[in-house]
Length: 361
Image 1: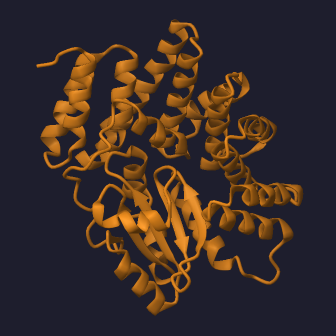
Image 2 (image 1 turned 90 degrees about the vertical axis):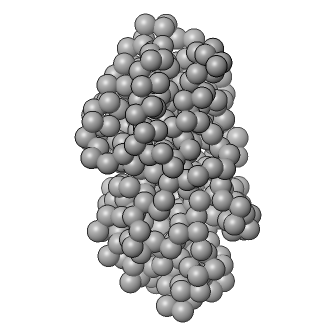
Image 3 (image 1 turned 180 degrees about the vertical axis):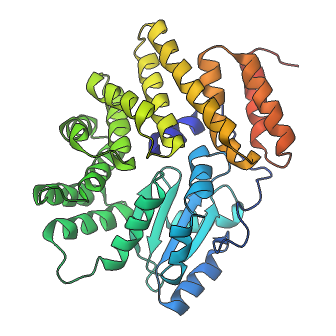
């Protein structure tokens, strides 16, 4: 979830500094790693857009995207239509590209015109394979002469958002919603984008209002999950509570099997965090936290490789700590450190857990 990466980086749990990162997820996958000069040159030579994935090794949602989406055949088969590149935002050599395309949360996917350097799209957060494939198809067809008014406004909003012109983006997305035809397949994406820029602009009351108005009517999708989570986050910022959104979040976390498991986990975390912030009864928080941890343990058990299991590590530790299960957190981090000795995340998180447990030695 787009909210979670920023949340985790701001807490004691995640090391946001430099360190020895894991090797590229899938060498030979066609993704150009940490070399945007080469990526832009190749995109210009082929006259195709550049798809740039901005990530960090400590960002579990980023790793989920890399392990489950970017390497899927439905995406890799689009390498004739796009150049795919990826940058680790923690690496010093990527400082200039991050300055050119500012990051407000991770992961961020940019689609860029390589000839002008102008961003065509900014997508903040994760999405499923089918959603990403559709997103790329939409970029390729966005200049069609018969594009409907609503889609033209959506494209206008996407580009304004990508350039950090947030008020322009809000106005464009609101015009798009006003023009929406019945059962328009872009509705969820527009509402998702609108709540995101309202939150980014600190227009929290409007953000909550939009989320409440549309969320329950949207089909299950990553965008719906984002709208619900963003609405809950805006409500927290506005010092209010929105039980309708919280119940929607729990329902999707428990049953929405079409979402990425990492996003379902993010919904559990969003509810636990909101309840804890407003001092809800501890028995209710514990009940949901136990559901959350059980879900994550089951997902981790399915992973056949350590790097895939690591996708769930940050949230498993958070859920353990929410329940006071320090020894379980320590055990799973020790196991992770043994399995991935070049990854700085397990020992960094282990140190943070020991600190919280006052085991200073």
